[in-house]
Structure formats: structure tokens, C-alpha cells
Length: 403
Image (cartoon, rainbow, N blue to C red; front, side, top):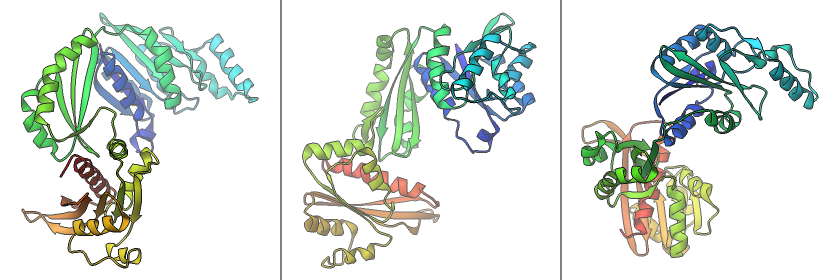
């Protein structure tokens, strides 16, 4: 079965709302063995929605529409499906009763414009919406000799998700194949370098190996599909082994694991305290650690706009020739086993003469010092801060295994 997601709403095209529905549905379909080859977004225009539906039904067996089921004139998903199938909508008596009852329970008078939410067409079956006023549609029809299905769901995720899981899935005859995947999360190697190391597998279809550049490093997904989970795991096994061998020493986690959480857990297990002085990430590294848990191992954290202001807090510190030496001085002052100092970004030139941004990070861990440089393309915004924070966390992770 080939599926396609079609999200409706001009606000999606203007960037006012991010289309998280398509990503969530695609992930859920993938684990159920359904291939998603296309995803579309279209504005609130009847002609263009019908055109998008025509394209989708020509190439996919299952089309899941998200949004456009509201009561206003610019909500056109029902009209588009009816136009595509040359069917005329009508007010379903039972849906009207249920709709008016929902408004009555909240002591509200139902505007007559809401009556379109009680529409059906001959090919459509209503899907119950326990969290909103808009029922969904489950539409079956023939296109040539092929069976096609369109499922129309509301846009709000709190309505869409339970309607998909509880109302839509039980009506579908999904393939028996099972999808299996493992994601390796890595640091220190670029995506192109990893792709080169795994070139014998990246062109494989089943199992498949794919690389993704993420904020916390490069993720490598090994996936397979078979008639059962056990068979899928067996099929993926050679690719899993090859990936682990090729990336040995760079993998910090798998699947849903988060770097900050793993780091804090390891620090707690080793009973070590961490201190941070941060200029370059402007507090981003500390927010990542606090986001995971209020851990006692984060002993000290200070965010500065300028590292020269550090003497206001520690006037006895000697001027440091480098950030790793400064980390050592702070470790002695704070009695911390692990100290990291994130310096600020400054303009620099790459080996080819291009303008770049460079920042240094100094580390101290139980008598050992390390100084790392991060050199990135010249950019503005939070991207530099994120990259610096995750680089520092990765090196902290490595330091706990030994410099």
C-alpha cells in the first residue's frame, strides 16, 4: 500500500503553522509497513485542493487529508472530495443531532454555518471526533480497477491523533509487513564522511541505511521491512553490524536517547560534579541540561556576555593563556571533577580563505586538560549557539570515557 499526506490550510504555506501532522502520520504509517512516497501542502483554494487530490489519487492508494473541516467558507476539504467524486453533499440527520447536542452541552447556540460539519456524501462514512465539533470522513471509491481511500481528519493534533488511531485505523486493511528501524546517534564525523564509510549500504533498499544531519550530530537510520518483526530484525542484522563497526567510537546513543540525559545519568553513576562557564552558547548548554532533569551533578553554571567579566566572580583567578587552563583553575576553585568553559565566537578565515566563525571550548577532567575548536560557516542566529553547546556536550561525554 502506498499512502500520501495532504495538509490543507493557507496558514501552512505562510509559515504561520508548522505541518507536524504529516510527519506524525508518516512515522506511524511507516512502522505499520505502509510506504509514504509523497506529502503535499495546499492552501484554502477549492480548485487547487481538487487538483492536489487528483494527483494524489493517481499515484497513491491511501490519501490522508489534514485540516479544512471547519465550519467557515475557507474550510473546503469536504467540498473538494465531493467535487473530485462528482457527488453532492447532504446533511446527515444523525450527525446534525450529534452536532447540535455538542453545542447544547456547552450552553451554546449552534451557528447555522456549522451545519456543514454534518455533511456526508454517498461514498463517505463519518468518523467520530470526541475532542471537537468536526467529524472526519472515511471515503472509499474505485478509480479504474483500483480501490482508493481518502481519510479527511481535522487539523488540530489533539483531534487528529485519536481519530487516526481509534477511528481510522480499525477500518483499514493494512499490509502484513512490519517495519523495523534503529537510529544511531553520532558525533565528531560529518554527514558526508559517514556516508562514505557506509557507501556499501546506503544504496541498499531493504535493509536501508540513511544519514540525517541533526542538531545533536549525525543520525544514521538502519531500517528493514519483512513479514514479521523477527524477520525484519534478521534482515537488518548485517547492516546494523556494519554500521556499528564503521562508526565505532563516535556513537553516543540510539533511538530516543538524548545526549544531555545520558550525560547526566553517567555523571550521577560516576558521582562526579560538573561546572560550566558559558559565553558562546549564551546559556543554551545549561538549558539543555536543565531541560532533562534537575540533577545535583550540575554543581555550578555561569553565563557571561564577556569572559573578561569572570574576575568579578573569581577575582583571585590568574589570567589564563587558554580556556583549558582556565577550566583547570575553576576546577580547583569550585572543587569540581569536570569543568567546561565555552568561549565566544569570533571572525576567522578558513584554509581556503572564506569567512567563518570560530569558538574554543576548554575542558578539565580530573587532572586532564583539553582544548577544542569549533569552526563553522558564517551565520547569524541560534544555529551557532546550538552547535557549540552540542559539541561541548559530546566532548564531555567522551571525557567520561577518557581523553
